[in-house]
Image (cartoon, rainbow, N blue to C red):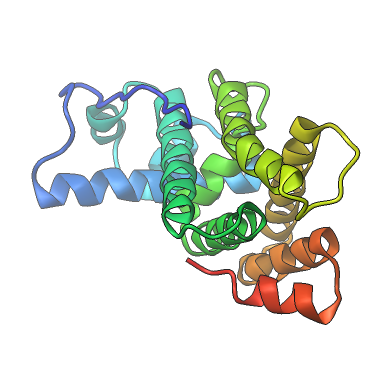
Length: 216
């Protein structure tokens, strides 16, 4: 199970109930996601977030007690995306190697479409952010058993450390997303991840069909 960071609901101590409050909260998250992806967590100030969101500090602190709480919520969104995707792949009953393909293709779709989830992924390797390391390690730990099953079933021919292979796949994924984001080429994320999967599984016709058909 992927570790989920703890909640912080600002001054209220509880999630927003009114539609307007939810829109304001998500608006702050969306703006922060763009800023964090562009200038980094440490390079983004509360004033930057307030100015870009056309809000007030009072409104921001109503929903988040500090800037770190915004980043933690993004880590949570990413963790939830991983947990839900891994669970859905398991329910398909497909072989482990195909589940890995399904998981990465679905995560690619999510990070391409959702700025908050994408920012959470990128923040998971930010050394200045508390809880980021644990989020990244929980992700690799969630993938390791599936990769191990794929190796033991003979679907993958791998002499390297089983856990290291899972970590390498995660590192390749986050590197691909980070490069696409930094180059403002968000729409290429799914294609870039498919390219990584082609290199991992091979480019013979059978492997290509397996990759292209692996979708949740």
